Image (cartoon, rainbow, N blue to C red; front, side):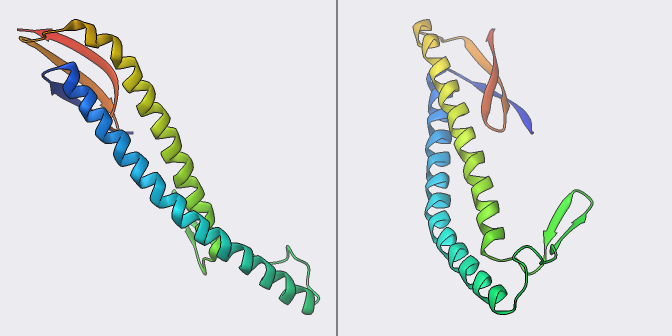
Length: 141
């Protein structure tokens, strides 16, 4: 996780930044979900073909070797198939869904600060973790 400190001039500016992050995350999530349907269909076709071929060849369904190797903390899949693709896209979808929820909660938590009104002369120092505010410091000149 990457943390950064950003300075904003108003609560509204923080909210606009969060709204943009929410919109970007929703857009990315939508793209992944569209791709997920396509790959899921290919994975199901691949599974059926594999089952038929294995049945014809009189082999057990789970007898294939794993084509995944680890290099340090990186996993590399050789001869990736639709199920491998499905797995990583499902992981990305889950991650984006979780991020979207956290962003929406942060945006909602910001609403009470709207009561501050005019904040001229106040800087808002925000500690963000991957674009998500975790701590806000109100700094007066």
